[in-house]
Amino acid sequence: MKNLNVLVVDDEPGICSGVKRILERFTVSYPFMDEDRGFNVYESYTGEEAIDFIRQSPPDIVLLDNKLPGIQGTEVLDYINKNNREIIVMIITSYASLELAVKATEQGAYDFIPKPFTPQELKSSMENVTKNIFLRSMTKKLNKEGKEVRFQFLSVLSHELKSPLNAVEGYLQIMQERQGGKDISDYDQIIERSLQRIKGMRTLILDLLDLTKIQSDEQSKEYRQINLRQVARDAIESINPYAIQKDVSIELHDGEDITMHADSNDMEIVMNNLVSNAVKYNKKGGRVDIYIDRLEQGPRIQVSDTGIGMDPQETSRLFKEFVRIKNEKTKNITGSGLGLSIVKKVIDLYGGNIQVDSKPEQGSTFIVTLPVHEYKSETTTS
Amino acid sequence: MLADDDVDYLFQMRLHLQQAGYEVITAESQREAEELLQSVRPDLAIYDLMMETEDSGFILSYKTRRKYPDVPIIIATAVASETGVSFGLNTKEEKKWIKADLYLEKGIRKEQIQTEIEKLLNQ
Image (cartoon, each protein chain N blue to C red):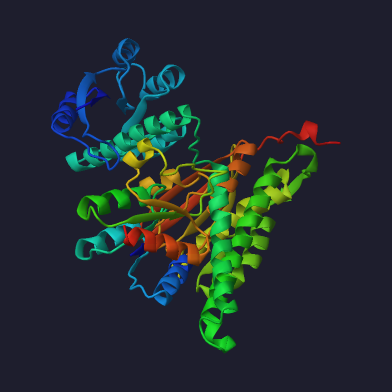
């Protein structure tokens, strides 16, 4: 049996020995692996020790506490990113610093385990990691054989575009062959489904256009003073019919007008996506509250909903392309899986920041903060 | 048995297969399919590849094979070989880790699916 080497970096000896105890008696079996995998566990109590250890014998997995006595966990993560990218890093963190953990996953950590964790939680995390390590080695192998395994933008995009086409084509064939009966009314449901799928595809295409728009050259952008409150009012106006249908009320809370030097298209993309998501993932009779104000560093937009919410694992994946949170509650909600990744791209472009705070069954709050500085104004005066 | 998270694909395949004279049971997710497998041994299974995760179909295949070693399995997906995940069941290596008998591109003609199903059932 081939074991995976795990390095636990934590200044609490209890955590180290606990992890050791749990993992050394644990094995993972994964469908495609011929044999089970066990774990060898090594311990470091400081970041400095950990880097020494990694330098001498790089492990497969590092379980990394962020709060350490000397250098911090993020610095160890930086070291690994620079020198041993193949190592999988799991951040161990308390719930209080979950935000930090999410940030760490953006900086290359594979995932995080909230502290305190149960043996079962640790085991299921390690199961995922093991699976990932295996698939990665398999991918490498296939690549070597001249084959490509790419779960990339294009492949997922082609999947997302072809699925509705296949569905509509299939329905049309059923109609062409009169499989459901002679009357057009026999096909009402089929026609309705086809229209739904076409609508979904239109959303996807519009989102893709948004994506190319924000990535397009600077010259096509028009920077001027934008009233964010007005952008919000316009967004509410266009989304309201849908909100009424879903029995959700939207309120823009009073405050002074906040202006910002930006491309109006960009700001519309951000506002429309946030507000329409807040309606879409809401409950019957729910609310959407929009606050726009100005902090010292610049404008802040806050969109809160009383919707279905998400757990921390779901929120951590939220801003990636084509990630749609799939569960029982979202099963009947359509979407391209691009909206929030687009919002994030726009905000990054302006040097801003987006955060999400969410609780299952209670709702989500998205907070966008934008910097006050005049974004690239020197290049856009032409 | 059909497992696919695209309800329209599920509806159409069920219709085609029923018209061809098969009895069909369906699942809308990997989880539902796993539950179904607890109580039902299908004569043949057709699984979508990407459901809850990108490899749901692979995992279902493996689990089916472990419980019912003789049930033929088809993996169906809309991921095009030219742009995306390129895998087949042609080499020994691939057969070893992909526990399915056949890999089908979604959108192929239903007569062809029927031929393939018959072939696997008669093996």
